[in-house]
Image (cartoon, rainbow, N blue to C red; front, side, top):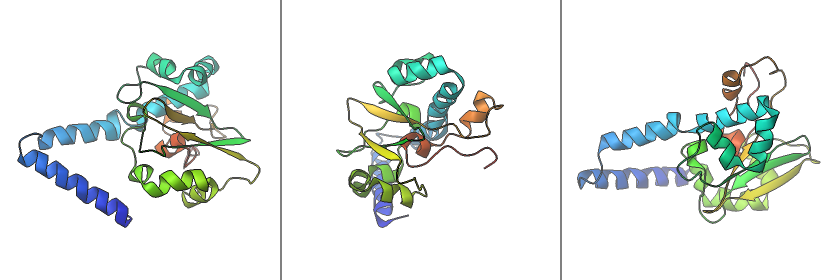
Length: 196
């Protein structure tokens, strides 16, 4: 954990404690929200959308045309996921999502944003030196792979449709969804290989 992460964690805990002490918030309410966005609402919803796109070409087409409407077909969306665009990774192109202004992020699809997504360092370096940032996340791309940066805003957020891993032809949608990570839907990672 970086010093910036520790500071954000301490600041969050201090604000939470103050709100609870003043009676404006209960510990139970905090736990419910954290649990919901960490598991129930979180990246599992986006993973279901990706898995459907991998198995249903017509859905994939609709997702790339209007991600908000396509996600709603699966009853996915909601909080700050009202206007979402899907961008597809291919052999020739890798997409990376950032919000250079603040930390706009599709919570309803991806759950709670990771601390690093909100950090000024990620927000500036992802645009200036995306290959170096991806390398730090453990993702080494071929030099001829185009990296396209998508800048989220309050009006439009993005989800990356990662490439389907090889060797997954016989897997069900649920099994495929288990291979999709939040990082692969931001672009700082790729979907997991089966058995990984």
